[in-house]
Amino acid sequence: MYKYFANAFVVNEGKEGYANILVKGNRIEAIISEPLSDLPLGTEYIDCTGLTLIPGVIDCHVHFRQPGMEYKADMESESKAALAGGVTTVLEMPNTNPTTTSIEELENKNALAQENMYCNYGFFLGLTNSNSEIAKNISRDLCFGLKLFLGSSTGNMLVDNKSSLDELFSITDKVISAHCEDEAIIRENLSKYKSEYGDNGTAILHPKIRTSEACYKSSAFAVQMAEKNSTRLHIAHISTKKEISLLKSGKIESKNITAEVSPIHLWFCSDDFEQYGNLIKCNPSIKTKEDREALREALRTDKIDIIATDHAPHTKEEKQKPYFEAPSGIPSIQHSLLIMLQLVKQNVLSLPQLVEKMSHNPAILFDIKERGFLKKGYFADFVLINSKEKTTITKENLYSKCNWSPFEGETFDSKIVATYLNGEKAYENGVIQPQKAALKV
Ligand code: DOR
Ligand code: ZN
Image 1 (cartoon, rainbow, N blue to C red):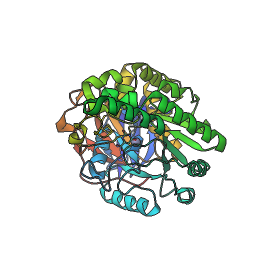
Image 2: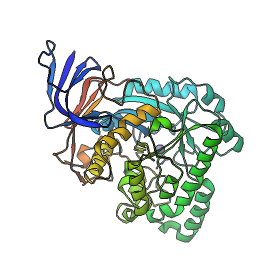
Image 3: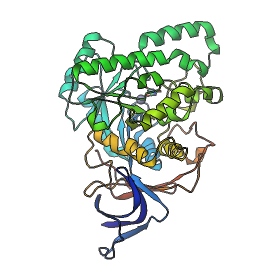
Image 4: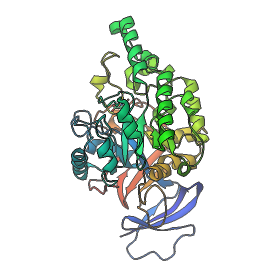
């Protein structure tokens, strides 16, 4: 019933230092700086000497493809990839098949998750041109946020009707996570480059079609609507320098408009299309080095509040199609924490900032109770990291069902040693524990 995590280097709420954590059942009983001399009888002792312990990562933007696209991925495979990557809770997006745009589909997803998820979970309701009434009245228990596609992407969930948008932006008691890319600009560029290149187009064209201007125009529109209506707007996967001018710095609690960036947009830049091609085709597109620098800077200055993956698996076969046919999306949930730890090593951000943006802030924004922090009484969701051991990514150690990653062959300077979920060991040294400890958050 008791577990004692001894002598860990703990990072939590802006502080770093050695501590011991006593867990009772699925919750944190005590966090103490001096070792406990009297452990309760039968306590399991977990020696964390040399390891860093942080609250489990909460990834508020993932696509797990179930129901309907299980040939690409499913809840079991992707939630295992999450655990192997130190992610303990996911909020999953509605562009499945059928789309998650009704109460019935949310209930269906929750039932599927109860059977199949290995990490904690919650779901988004997808907004449409005609479901504002459902979105207004839906219980918080059933959905954690509303997803709005202001630009079309995988799943054709574009919302483009003016009066529907007025209705949707008038919802103020739930977070609207918006995919912002201007549809008219994209369509125009797409037809121009298709006629120019025909079958010879490559992924180098992607940021020329899904441009910075398309992102800025759509994000500016969303911000303007949110300011007018006091909407709780969260801009998903910011990818450009220009959009950052729309954001304010400050603590997440003080803002009505927040923003997220993906490790993918922080890691790659448009120079990488030559090497990776469609493997790094995603929406919004990866932009220039200058954009990437601005995104990194915006993390440090708290203009960007959250790091979330937009984990979006497609099969290798699909990604190997010609550029215009290949779907957008990159699997990354297993490597997001490793990528961000690498950026900590490169002084892009500090370790407490990483924890704030990958664990604390998603819990605050989506009101995920008793998670995201190391606090007495909170759920014991932990990641144990060895920052002196390297990890090389190979096909053999991937959990995502699509079984490819743009990081194959990459070596990161840290290792995720173990992930604890609701007080139970869920992953350790390459092995997922067979028993499920996952909970709906
Ligand atoms: O690249 C993307 N892939 N962007 C999205 O908006 C959707 C996602 C997917 O579901 O494949
Ligand atoms: Zn997405």
